[in-house]
Image (cartoon, rainbow, N blue to C red):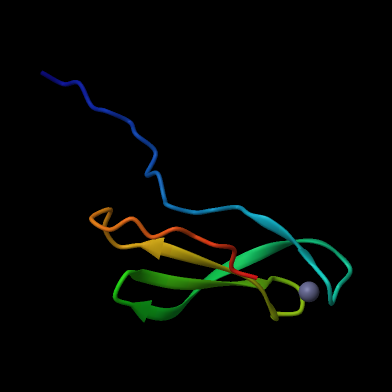
Length: 73
Ligand SMILES: [Zn+2]
């Protein structure tokens, strides 16, 4: 009974990259909580270099409703 699971703590980290129009290159982005909406949390993706928001994403709270993402610009 000495068996230990050596699961390296899996963090929910998205190593996403986006194209930043300000830096004019693909850059790593940082996820920031922007708004808390009834249907979910809206996150901003900020450029890790210049810090400007270059993307957004809506994390749905539940799947009770079928919200369609009709393109967040
Ligand atoms: Zn940038």
